[in-house]
Length: 343
Image (cartoon, rainbow, N blue to C red; front, side, top):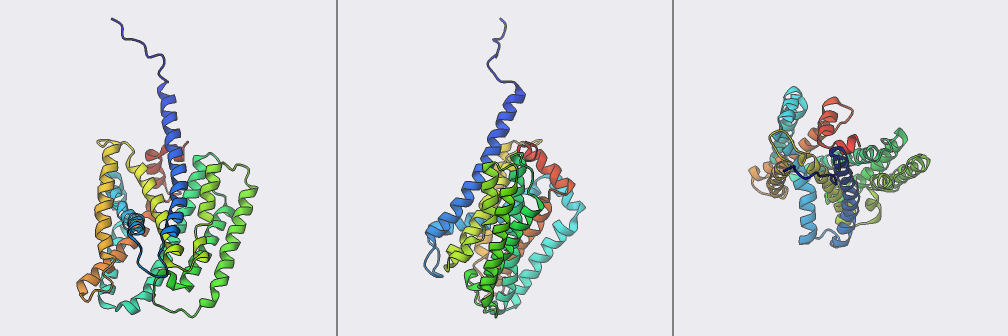
């Protein structure tokens, strides 16, 4: 008996295009909603003053900080990433090891009261890393929506607004819960002026853009206004927690899509499960180490320093793996999430 024809089934190419559209919308909508929800949740759940966060906000911060940092380790389960790292040992091996060992030694030997000045520089680097990711998200949203990547003036606007936001945090370190007193507090209005100038430039550039798909506009405006809570709230958690949670959730979403891509010898679900296990296990370890700065034991303070070094190693590794102007990251990500880079 002849097999029944499947005339109603769509052609393979059409089915694949439909899957790609769904995945692309998942990333665009997920990025916008997770970012907006992170800020709303952090502001709503923020405790008064510098009180400790409640269990709900603590859980959000755990996922958005420690878990997202640990998720970077998943990349090294892939043979092509290990081969790329072996060919670029300076960035992917030497720098991470040096950062972890160096910060472990510094935290063990330097009293925390003095170490806080170095933490101010570390946090400045961290928030710069946040804004670079925001820029990448906006650029990727433009490409995914066929509206083109961010233009030079749009790029400068995001980075200018970010510079103002970072400066606002550094001149008011109590927002970062650091006990240092920089003699530049009077520059907070200047920092806000820089931030506002970046926002104004970005809105102007967006208004002049020919193609403005709603999803691109939403992600671009989120990137542009990312540091707004710094200038609206005096509570450390209301001002800063949303930045951390939004950044981490953006990262976990796109790494989840990359890890969930089918690969030779590994299904998409297998890759996603491996990533989740690495992220959660590593996140728990990092979270435990992040609270040891006040320990009287030198080895526990060294673990706290190693935690800082691991976060900085995450900055360094990510800066290489997501740099789409380089051939390997562009080829790797195009093969993993083609619906974003070649819609």
